[in-house]
Image 1 (cartoon, one colour):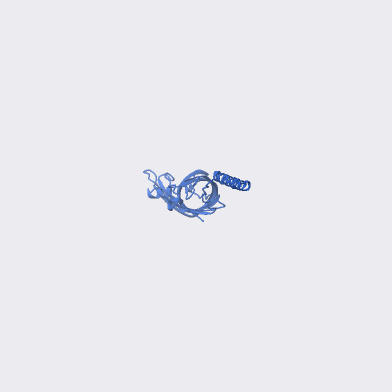
Image 2 (image 1 turned 60 degrees about the vertical axis):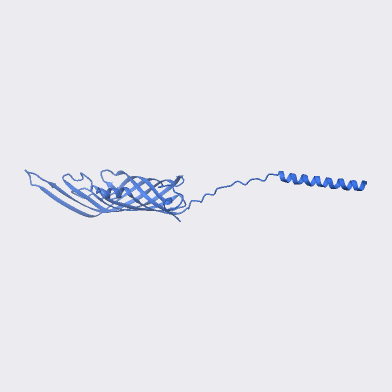
Amino acid sequence: MMPFTRYIVSILLALVFANGVVAQDSLQVKPVEDSVIVHPKEKRTAIILGTDYGKLATTAFNLDTKYEFNASLIVFKRLRINIDFGHGALQPKNAIENGSYTSTGDYYRGGLDYQFELAPKTYLALGGMYATSKFSDEGNVQIQSDIWPSLNQSFMREDFTAQWAEFVLTSEKTFLNRESGFFANLYVGIKLRLRFLIERPKPENFDIYAIPGYGRTFNNVVPAVNLFVAYRISL
């Protein structure tokens, strides 16, 4: 009986050991893998095309004729290469007492910005630009007198050129905060400019009262504001 008993005991011990191993395996807790949400990386290169809708509004209300278009190339994710083109027909009030004055021409700007992403699709940029304007002006002076001979004098001058530099602060964000679709890449913003006049012509008789792209010539340092809408195309 002893061999048989030992055989039975051996089988029972084997079953108990196997059951313990199975129970131990069943009690092991498998580690839960963390789920990580991977956001798409922001493109390092993009093109931005925009226009100044504030200038379009002045044209619509027959104040001055102005329009301006902007193009920017973003490289290395932060550096923006900017080019602007604009046209203006400026009629500053009281430029000539008892008369009228108009300055008409085109202007070009080029420069660099460095942009910071303050929040998703919200940017702040700092930079500078160099600008030049090619324009002409014309005016008329009418002075009526009952004692002295009346004066009626007109002038028209062409081929003027002026240059200036600008410090530019830009703030922009998405128009509707969409994640996809057309409006996801549509931006609105504001540009604060501080212009420093470098050179302008100084003709005799009648001074130049306004320069397209620069504004009134009453000061060599002129602040300006642009309201713009732009579309960003990632490359």
